[in-house]
Image 1 (tube, rainbow over the protein chains, first blue to last red):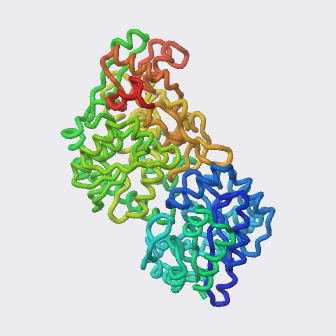
Image 2 (cartoon, rainbow over the protein chains, first blue to last red):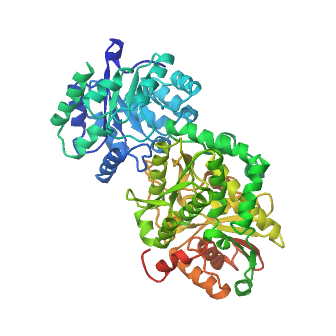
Image 3 (cartoon, one colour):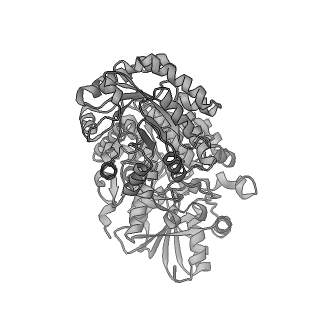
Length: 253
Length: 386
């Protein structure tokens, strides 16, 4: 399955995918509607995990806050079932939440809640088989990560088995805002595009409209997470978040 | 039962259903590089000789096997203590850090990143770094910093940087998260010197091999094949090293966990810190916070090989309470003149409780690994922070 989740890319334009931590506030799904209204092409929804090793301080804080206010996988999926968002939703989480329920049950629950794709941060292609099968059976796209250190051989294997889009980690490190987008991002995006027809999004450290535009040059778009979650943690309303997203959208053209 | 589990490299890092390499894509090449380097080094006589030399002239190996004569007479068993408390830096952790330190240098790495709970692994890492000319950054939860301050001072004296970790339970679990995050950002220069038999492949295999020296020596030193071999289990490295020497014998293998951190006894299969193993967690998979007087056992996971050995029935796991552990430290101190670490005292506590019962019948020959010494715990034991 190599179907793209990102219609805009097929039109030759750049995609914008915001990341929102599920359950971060009581009415957190309003942020999803704001993302859609401001021009998001898809939305990644973080299912908060107690030990998010790939996340920097901002998403850690967001995860902790969501868990502290009682958010659970069940409550977040129930919230999603209760709203209609007009762009694909992708769940981003960690392996233990998938394995605890069992991949087949977990993926079926996501599909029931209207989720279109799944990205598991600590499930590299070598360990993905069981979840790959479960995702396919539930009709979920399986988004895989590629990193600057990924070899050409691994890249080909990852590209072959991913669907929805490929997520290129811009820099060796955790998620989080950075002053500049690493040069490794463009080089990686170019390598990925050479071996895959899937859209390639660059993420990690995309903090501003100009960074989004720069990162998207060699890629098909960007994922923006920590910069938005910092705003939400600091109290930004859905309307205020929409302004940020709209300015990124317009910078991407 | 498959004694071979303790002999060869586990295929794909798998111990039955457990193990594996559950890390973000950015860490896969680094883990693969460590695996390749260790495979190569472990088959290289020059590397083995250099490590053996350091273990001998630097770390003080072989450590003695001490008959605990007074306690044996009181309990009606024959108890021998494998004295890892007498190794340099005061615990078995030195075995692993010298191995991984040499490996890091062989790989051209210049920096060691480590997590620590009680501080014993942190001190050992700082020691290896000083000896081998590497820098060391050690992540430690602030709760552990409070209760193991002596070890923080030791690390700093040795030239290591101790980074306080304030997230989550502020203990070993969170320190491990932070060490892994630091490694992702510096895989070119840094080696992640994981202190136990958890983590992604090759760590459970590699650390067990570096700790195998405990069991190999004890097997040679023991006057009889013990009826029971016992060691404390947090992540499980001293137990894994000890068990490796006896897995192909008739000895029962018993791991003793902290009642508040008993992943083998009370956990369920899960993925944390790179491996599938037994994990204390809730119904949705959120990892629980452990709670033990012994910082080194205050961990909700356990090495995957223990999960496997437990699943096939080759090893057994028991729990003891904080109160039993404190009593065990005093009892061993007053009968044998040995002040052991709170971690090691878990094994002692189980022996004290079980001796003369069906679980440990009178007359049993028992080999117990005393993983470390208790100087670091004096503050806790005299009523300070626990």
